[in-house]
Image 1: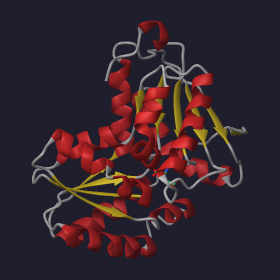
Image 2 (image 1 turned 120 degrees about the vertical axis):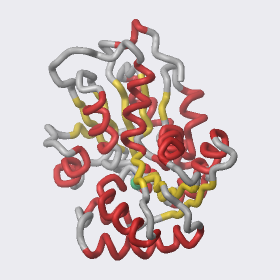
Image 3 (image 1 turned 30 degrees about the horizontal axis):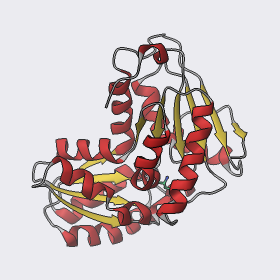
Image 4 (image 1 turned 60 degrees about the horizontal axis):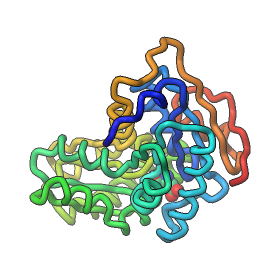
Length: 276
Ligand code: DGL
């Protein structure tokens, strides 16, 4: 990806949007990778979930989210929603004067770097899996790699309830991952193709290894996106030592106080309610 013009680099914030609060896992990784950067986050909580909606609707909603961020002068847009990345990336890039990073391409790069067998599994929402975006991204990079994909819609409510390390999480993971490994027993790399899934990473890794009977690497697209943002900023990231600002906006504020810190991993000062 082209690096950002240096006049834009230091003072302007990075814009991040998601259908809801799950994208805060990307903000969490971003704040570790680029601690001095200011971030503007938008959660489209009034219209979540995107994962069960049609590509046309996801594209329309995503464009309004991006417009909101661009109006705040962001120098870079991160689509912290796999469903939006999978269904709306070309339209978002076309509509943006600043670089746009989706979740799929960095996730595909990390998966290919991690796999030894070339057999990769990806799990995500229905919208992400139906789009075939991961299959296309993997095939464009390595024609010999084999991708198996499975929609796992129940993981989103589990992550939101905070049921991420218990018997219920393990049971649901076993049910889904048995189906995934039935498609290909040689999968050695599992891509968490949904912003919510990093919260379930421990259980998913453990259950995947049990079912596969061999080691399975878990690749998290949140970390891959943060690294891609670092590359896009090149030598221009904000080097100040104080932590950057995090300004959060949402289109509905119900339950955010409870949910947001779970995904961000740190306390939050609050969300400002906006209409798009
Ligand atoms: N943010 C979505 C994703 O990463 C999950 C939640 C939703 O369905 O909107 O695909």
